[in-house]
Length: 336
Image (cartoon, rainbow, N blue to C red; front, side, top):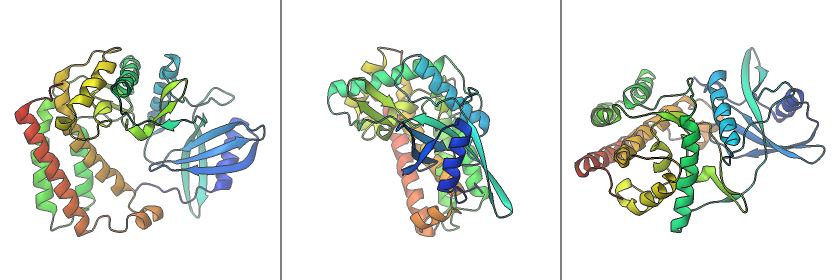
């Protein structure tokens, strides 16, 4: 079971940041929406504003979080628009807070970032899509120059199969859905696993949807939230930007690649990985949410999670995606 954020109080957050960073805060604490971690807006007594990110306990090791920080710092050094973590007085970017909750203790890793604003960016024009492709191409150029040895490796035979074993070991799939769920996942893994043979993997953002991109007038696009940093095919950071299935987004893919290839080469054959990667993400979310099912906030927000109706819907969604993969393999990579 993944530890929860229940013992993390506002008083504990403020005290931890003040102690770790030698900051005199004015008591402001604004919670920001965050599905995975806990993120707070803070303000120093001199009026400067910051964002404190408390990582979900048990999700990433200290080394894995530092992989994220190194990627951000590499990007910043290459003048890529990101928000790197701030160092403390000793130059460290990651701090710890241990909170007692009765007889139990929970350790929270946390980091401090400068606050950066901007407006949401929805690509509409051809040049908007090229801009998106360009910033991802620059990010991947930086990503390919370094490593993230403590991060997940995005391969179906290891990552996705591991998540499926975790789901079954916990006995989560409703008995009436188990056989069908197993059959769909087994067929999908059999189809997509050969597609990843010999594919080059590198550091990628991992969760590069539009909600993690801001437009800062006069500065350009800003990439946010590298928490899901992966070792994955570059296509992982492209498909999440698309408004629909790959077969229906040839125009958008073509424009993304126009911008991308200004900074980095891209093999068009790798576009066949888009729909398999979508299937893998569906399984990933099933496993990740299952780890949170004992959280009070999660049970309140998703009261039907894990019931028979839930697993019927999830199995149907996976079956639909399997059919998309079959059709994509028959027609080949989308032509752009």
